[in-house]
Amino acid sequence: MNIQDAQEAVDEWIKTHGVRYFNELTNMAQLTEEVGEVARIIARRYGEQSEKESDRTKDLGEELADVLFVLLCLANQTNTDLQAAFDRKLEFKTQRDHERHHNNPKLRS
Image 1 (cartoon, rainbow, N blue to C red):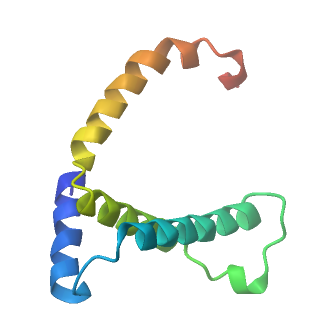
Image 2: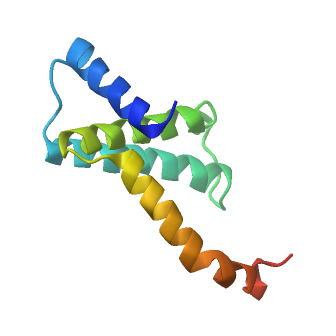
Image 3: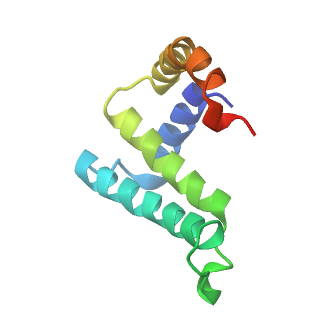
């Protein structure tokens, strides 16, 4: 599934199961909340914080999927073609960063 297909699938899900989109500010708050849940898992599982027993059952993939779902909602309701935007961004980063990253001694191991 590409990004455009994912946007269409989310839109269909909203129309079928969700009644309507939450407003943009509500979805922005939801996105922030979901990113916080991802950050908590990363900080405790891969960072220096100790992982609480209640955190051990959290599924990182599921939390990342929550972030993606809300992100796709925001793209849909703001009429953003995320596929086109992502393709442009990837091309831009490729042009800008290829030599920079290859020449960065910090990235050599």
